[in-house]
Amino acid sequence: MTVFIDGPRMPPKRGGKPDSLVIFLHGYGSNGADLISLAPYWADLLPGTAFVSPNAIEPTPMAPGGYQWFPITDLDPHLMEPGVRMAAPSVDRFIEREMEKYELDSSRVALVGFSQGTMMALHVALRRETSLAAVLGFSGVLVGGARLRDELRAKPPVLLIHGDRDPTLPIPFMFESAEALAAAGHGAQWHVSYGTPHAIGPDGLELGAEFLATYLKTPKIAAGR
Image (cartoon, rainbow, N blue to C red; front, side, top):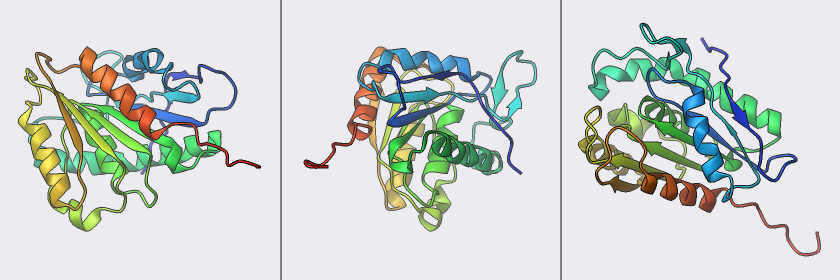
């Protein structure tokens, strides 16, 4: 069953119809307003890009205004896999709906996740029939890596960024995720944000913008057309 999701938006800085789209997937207990705050920092490099940051599929207990993609009782990635799979169809349907809305194909859409949102972004993007432009994951982990080789359908460029002082999802999770991607026949770039806890540091913000701009550059129109 899919759940309708939506959240805060920011239109392209240059105005008009967007030529690309960045979809933010927030972390556990947060909401769409959190990650949409990154959009103004990235708009200069992505002037034709629209940004959207949907709230996750259900409210988080004991966290007013917070949402979760799935409940978390243990940070073992193996135990989180059922939750990721349950929430994945709602994220995938949201992507399709946004593509239809803006008349964009998947090569013009990027996912940006933080923590639990990174889990969702990696799971969904790697199993789609058509590849997205890119996946940027902050402070997260690849869930279901053991089955990825059999389920891998798309190979979008992936950048993982993680703080070395992260107490929530310690940095070994990033290296394990990169190794699992390689074992499945894909791969990922990665970056360590030194001195950064479970958060996005200034270096991550800058590298993330450059990564997205690399894959969401406005397509050039052939001469004479």
